[in-house]
Image (cartoon, rainbow, N blue to C red; front, side):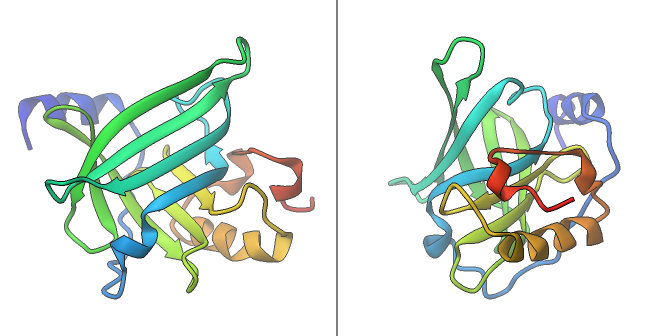
Length: 169
């Protein structure tokens, strides 16, 4: 780990979360557009709604990452671009928004049709529930919440993108 990574990692407190490798994970099927259904609040998405993530293969074999969402105060679309490379398992990526410093992107849950995904950022502070469509039914959401809870996440802290996506309380 570089000195910069050590410093950055120390700034982002939280218990480490390590997801299991998915040997049959198919990155090509995973590429494309994902809607954020829910997330844990984080500084880089604070105040954003209708968040989308897009993953595409680049000519050099790495992955182009474009995250975007609407700023709720201004109504303007904000966008962040990154580059991702393979991590230590087929379902793990290293995402570089800044050169030399990467964030962990670990797919912890994926349905068989590649339409729903739970992504861990490597600590209990970073979690995303993603789907190919902007809304999920409760029976589609429940396995995702169960996965997150099994990893140690407090799902009561999730911020939901749409009322239809939040579980019945």
